[in-house]
Image (cartoon, rainbow, N blue to C red; front, side, top):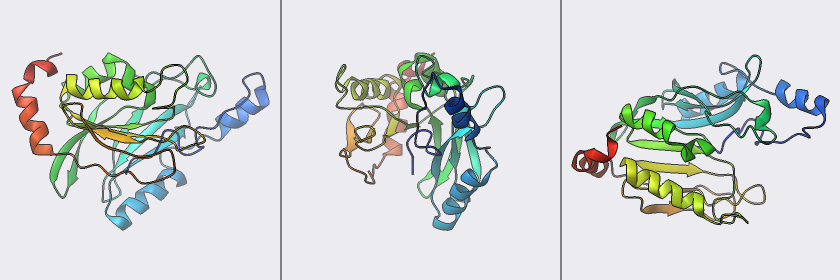
Length: 229
């Protein structure tokens, strides 16, 4: 299960001209070992599910837009901080940027799969993709918060970008977005050829996707040249 980004506060905003509101937003940050993440760990263990939990992570001097991959035993196997924060707008102007990306080998009933995480705008920058491909990513999970289909300026270009990312790097990608009216929903997944596997609507819902891991691995072998960095 993948949740939209910064789920601990619903990607809430603050008035950038109000220092009290800014500080209150920062003070709402949670630690990686705190009750918020522990709740997801307990749920993952109880239901035998792997989860990507997202949160505003406390940090000094600034918090981070962060995500953790939790395996079905409730263990944190990957910790990722958003690298390309929206420093030009609230609320992320109050955040620090992460510096690196890595992958984890996630044990599933279908065997191990190499997972990487991008957080929202990270998917638009080649350095993040290159780092994950270098480390052998097979599936990338993307917590998100922005219009995917109905952006008034760019339409569905973000979906096109994810499809291109998957094809160019030969891996599966799943994007989890907030429903309307916050964003426009349309959480979706694409295969290693950039083809859409599933897409939700604007309403709150679970969107399921099946990745063919054997096919991804065959394509990564055949199209090895796409993954040379």
